[in-house]
Image (cartoon, rainbow, N blue to C red; front, side):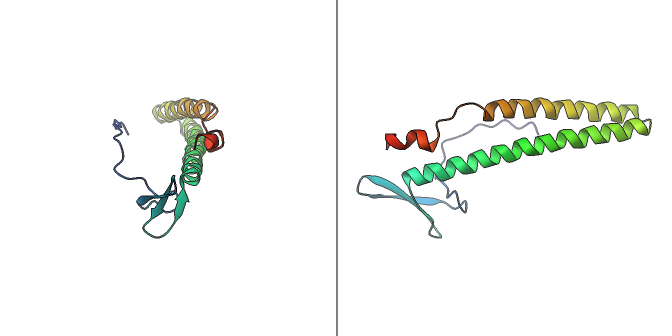
Amino acid sequence: MSEKYDLKRPAALTCPDCGGCVEESVVGALPYYTCHIGHRFAAPNMDASQFERMENALVVALRTLNERVELCRRMAETAKANGQNYSMERWGEAQREAEDRAEVLRRFLEQEWMTPNTLKNAV
């Protein structure tokens, strides 16, 4: 997959629970977000839910990359045992690529984040 990602400003926010579009309303001075099936979040709760979903998605990506490393290692070993040198090399390359990308993602995840807890006093 060699797509280029050109992120635009979203036209709408989505519900962290169901993925549906949300509508913003204001109660007092605090924004609330309600999706079309009724999930409702005050702004700080919306932030916490979005952050949790994002963090979970990144952790799943890291786990999947780690599993890919193992699958590629096993496939390289199988190819080697069968005397398939070209396949062994290609699986080895795929393993190293997955290891490199997992390391980048791991370092990214271990960085300090502005979490919903650190932003509570900003609202």
